[in-house]
Length: 392
Ligand SMILES: Cc1cc2nc3c(=O)[nH]c(=O)nc-3n(C[C@H](O)[C@H](O)[C@H](O)COP(=O)(O)OP(=O)(O)OC[C@H]3O[C@@H](n4cnc5c(N)ncnc54)[C@H](O)[C@@H]3O)c2cc1C
Image (cartoon, rainbow, N blue to C red; front, side, top):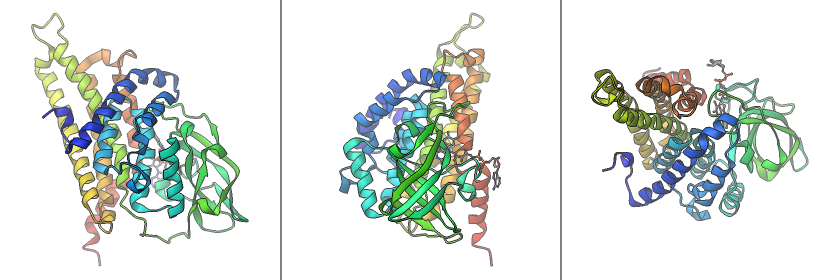
């Protein structure tokens, strides 16, 4: 068994993984340039469209491959080994389609339209919920973006931050407060109706195009209204446990694996003239390399285990997995940060060179700490789930 294919279970997965493996190698060659310039990798997105990856989670009824969550995260991990930014960006689209496939959170006709546009034109979708005033939407703040009811729909005005994939989006799921009411809503906006303000200039994940987007009096017809919710009213109907969000840990574990591979190869081949053997046989290096494996393998195993459980679970049982998906995300992002740090210690001062990828991995992997769910929310959810049985 090839260690690279540790989690592959079927021939169809292996074949498709070969496609994403080749793309990953191509993306790795382009990554440093986009990272340095902070540019969006349009050519990578074109490649992902051309090979069909953007359609792989679309339901079979609309002509897609309907791949499982388990397989989806395998590809995400693979893509991130080449370029974390591209993997994170496309992960939102491919994951959202997977999630909509199981949650059916969109009105049926709207979901059909979106899927048809993905199949026909390679259209891309993401959810843009973050705003400066709310911070992470997972904290429950009311959006300041406002939707005003008008004849046959709504007019939406506001500004969203951290809008990943924005330069390539055809569909944007936007959250907004309903004017003159406590209610909030979700609206599907067309990419051509928004303005992108290029604000994304950050330490890591620099090529994700996570700019601000501005909506000025954008008309959204009734057919593109996804939900209008009263505060405090929870609807369980579309709750699928959020398995698709495993694309986030998959991405950062992919970056960790890339750092591991670099450090392993370096240690096995670098032999300074103070030694009669490569540094791989020096005890403190061996220890660090072993620790890297011990950071990544358990986190990966947990992630694939949870994905398989979600794939196999009945719709009614999936919501119970949510807290454990958070555990995967927290474990994966923290261990990936530690693995990259150890890899850099193995390589030494060269690890900081701009001509090598390690310093980019170090910056990219840091962003994982600020993707949802945040660590404090994960721990709180696990505690709440654990004590729920015993509460009066
Ligand atoms: C690379 C990247 C890509 C992203 N892509 C997207 C995207 O496509 N779409 C999207 O909508 N968003 C996206 N986000 C945004 C992300 O989901 C968060 O909204 C964003 O990172 C802000 O979260 P925060 O915790 O830093 O900010 P804040 O929520 O402002 O938190 C700042 C600090 O205050 C603390 N804090 C704030 N409120 C509370 C509270 N109520 N209780 C306890 N502590 C609190 C936090 O713990 C943190 O320490 C992306 C983020 C990153 C880094």
